[in-house]
Length: 83
Length: 554
Image (cartoon, rainbow over all chains, first blue to last red; front, side):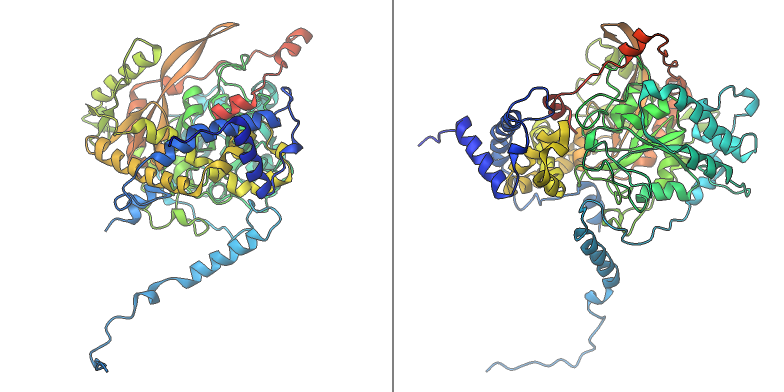
């Protein structure tokens, strides 16, 4: 069965629930104000776009778990692992 | 019941855990505990008192210019760091002369450049007047320096151009700053930057501040990334040299945009302790300087192991970078110091653009210096690993700032979007990103560095992701067309190397700069507004939107 992609409204619900869970109140921003540095509408739009574009590509990437350890610092790691 | 065997053999060497340094770990743990209980979690208390010795290379004759005499100098602000060091050592000028010359330019032109957040005039004068020569002084003694405003400076406001830190006054210096000061450097001021090191320099709500020193009366021309205040101070001759940070091009981009030599060292070469973080695993502190020799002097002073930053430990010793950056001759002819194969990625010189022409000429110059030029392919999945996977940096900026996100989103001004996006990558996706970093590094070694020693770059991002070093330097001039006409701008190149190859990168650029003069040209002075109308026009605000900041963010 094909998975139905979330709508804007569903993503907004997800985003606001996540923010509320960790104690972030988006209503401290104006609802919609193009002259403000940031507003709720634009922040939600930005996050929706990020979720739709980034998560699918990254989560679907297959890395060889045995051959490719997760490494925070590849450059120093290349020295730390010299024998 | 099984028989229990009891050995009467010699127990052998003590177990390996007895060789671990518990004391070092416990001291660090205590410091971190203190820091996390502090009101400002991003501002750790000093883990241990900073006390740094001066690297002996800073006293070597190579650290001082050889062919300079004060009688040939009409303007002290034109001097490179190595030239000024020579004249101070030879008692032909005093540090205070240099400080006063820079302060005069700051007073005259910084209203246009807008490169400084804070000018420490009185402090700099006091330090300069206190300089005493002993005969064996480091090259940095009495040299005025510009410090990006995300480096902690004891007793001096450190804002990162953010509302969050607008009143933050650290009680200690970042390790890199402490090392520069220990070597005699004088902090002349704190520099404008992109808010929290994201975009070109703006106020927290996006109003453009620092301009490109080559086009000071045209703010629309990009001065480079977030270290643009540092770059402008050197290009605009308001400081001898400067330091910045790079997470996504913020040393190399402003260096290229403003005709400077910028060196982004390998991760761990310079301590990040006492620097306000942007993306913890890929922030790189480094110099933006007038040429390779000046960059080497700065990095020699800044680099080295730091007990307050474990990433700096267990790494190769810092080599003599200053010697590496001294042009090398064979039979009277300048050649590259070490045999070097330069890898050229596909399409690097394709087309007829001014950049393509300058790049081709640069490669021809390197060939004449004895370098071998080789074509190299890009590793598999290069676009994916350096493009989409670049997003995995975002949770790292969100995590240390979570308290501020809870407090008031408006504190993030125009930069808010990328901090919010960082909350929406899952833990497994973040971990996948760290595997991707390993894959990218491995393929870079296998595909690129199996065929060459250094490689040209068209973007700093790939090597920022994996923490490999890069050097940026000027290779010509072009034009930029704006509504006010065509303007001359510097053109630059970026060359990357394997981890801890800063000496090779400096040697390469030093040889190039020994036979070219792009790095010696200085931008003309800004036109000062003389009428009310002109002053009003100059004061017209340009502003980045949140959407532009999101695209431009490092």
